[in-house]
Length: 96
Image (cartoon, rainbow, N blue to C red; front, top):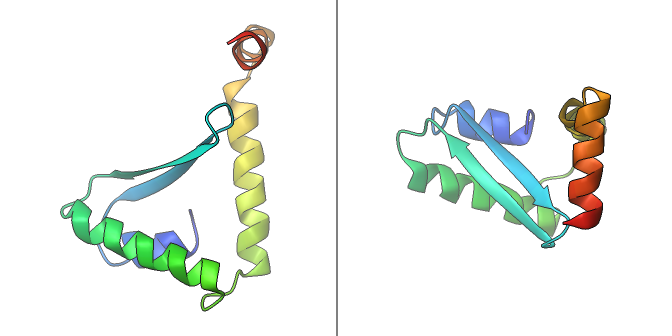
């Protein structure tokens, strides 16, 4: 989120931020925008970025890929900041 989306969405003033959130249990990926003056333009820009990444027209930068991995790890760790949170998350993942 902090590379190509940051540059082409926030950099153009289309949104303050955007996020991608996977759901393992539903096998879906959710996308969201925050503080967008024109969410339709922002969404269209993101759609174009994703299509370019998939087609290979816009290559993945190794630094951006490493930063993305760090972001995923940080997000996973921040959800489980103590034993109680880890137990709750484990229960949700396994039982629910």
